Every structure is written in structure tokens, then in C-alpha cells.
Image (cartoon, rainbow, N blue to C red; front, side, top):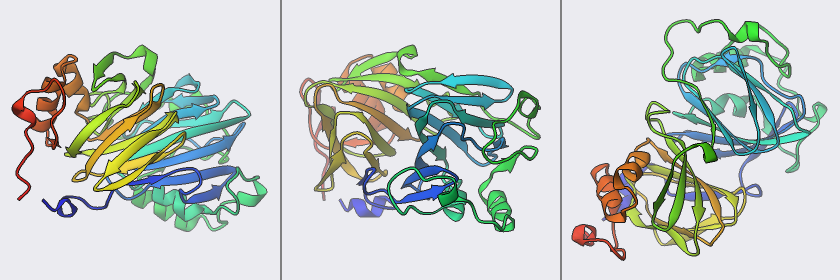
Length: 332
């Protein structure tokens, strides 16, 4: 089976030393995924920084606070987000945020991809892998191309504010023009249900139902050598390292890494991964559906496998305590 025919690009890993790095308005940006089903950016920002209020009509947006504290202002509500907090924003929800701690590190993602192109247009390559001063990282003076990029990639601004000023409730309380899909999700992993599968503890942050089925997201704790067996992926999968390390095997290559590593595995990849005891990972699936498999499987790996295979993933090797449903497929 030639899996290269089933995907747009091979799996890859980037980390804070290898991801493309850019500077913009006092922020160090790592571009981890662009122009695929989803886009991922990691931001390192100083106290007081935040964008003007805006909406995204074309994509859902998510934030995961890795380090520090950030105050989000979403649709007239103030949300205090510490490390470990997820914020999911449906299309057309007005929002902004302000960094409260001395520094914050935030994972920012969109589905579908596209919104990251505006940041790429505005920013410039980082001279060093550190957070820049405001003087080192000013945006372009000509705002007209940026306005064009905003229209193309789906960012709609609220009434004008300085770029690094937090918004007010008055600006965010107005109902968005047109339609709004879904609801805001604001949570930490300890508030969601926990599932056990493949010797991993999966703590649900966002289900497919929470995200209009754009993605699901788990905070995963590993036992010694636990991980996912060899599969031909039916959906895109992403692993981000929070604590410890993860080793990924994809199409005969070894990748993965430690804290801050980002591994993208597109649908059509043949992959497996494992992590040592105590490792903690964020695991995304695009689109969502893995959450339904865990819930329906109720801790039984064979049932979970059956659910995942019904959604397009193909398991390629048998596992202990699983029935013949996992027979190796014909490779011809």
C-alpha cells in the first residue's frame, strides 16, 4: 500500500529550536503548522499584550495556555485562564485577551487553516529565539495590505483600539452580525471526563460536539511505555509535549520530542507512538470523533478499535487482549 497517495504531506516534528520563528509586536511566534487542515502557532508574550477585539467568520479558534496567566474577553464575559486552560471559540464570536503574568506562552490554533497567513504577512523572521522588544518587532507601517489579508483570511475587527490594548465589555457584548455557530468552551482537563485506553489516561478537554466536529482534544497521561499501536490514520492527529517526551514512528522514521515538541501526522500516515511513565501530552484529532470511540468503548480496547476503524482508521498490527478484528490487512 502506497500511503503517500493518501495524504498531502508526510508526518513531521518541530520544536522550539526548529520551528520557523518570527517577531511581531513584542511577541515571539513559532509557526508549527500552516495551510493544512488546521494551523498551529505558539506565542510567547509579555505582560499587558493583547490584540484588538475581532471575530473569525471562516474558522473556529482555540487557545491553550501553556505557561502564565491570560485574561480573555469573550462576547461580554471575562475569563481568567491559568496554565492548563483551553478556550474554544466558534466562528463569529468577538474576543480579545490581555496577558496578566510577566510572560505567557500560549498555543493558538485554527480549523480550517488560513488565519495564520495574516501573521506571516505582518511578522518578520526572528533574529534570535527570544521574545523581542516592541521596538524590534513593529508591524508594517502600510496598513492597507493587512486589511486586504484580513478580508481574505477571515478576521473581522471590532471598533478600533490600539493593537496592544485590551477590549471592553461594551465592544464585546454586541451580538455578532449574521450567524454564530456553536458555543464557547472554557475548561481545564480536571473538569472533564477521563477514559482509559491503550494504557493511557485520556482527559477530555474538547469533544467533537464542543467544536462543531472540527477537532477533539485530550490531555493524555502515559504509563511506562504506553502509547498507540501502528495505524493507517483516517484523520489528522497532532501531539504537543507538555511534560516528558514522546517517540513517534511514522513510515519508517522516528520523530517526536520533549516539552514543546509538536508532531503533525496527517491522514494517510502509518504511525505509532509511545511515551514513558509520567509523560503528559496534548493530543488533537482533526476532525473530531476519537472522543466518541473512547466513550463508546468504555475502556475496552477492542471496542475502541472497532469504532475507530468504522471512522476510517486502520489498525495494522494485533495488540494483546484484542480479537481477530485486528488482523493485518493485505498489503498488496
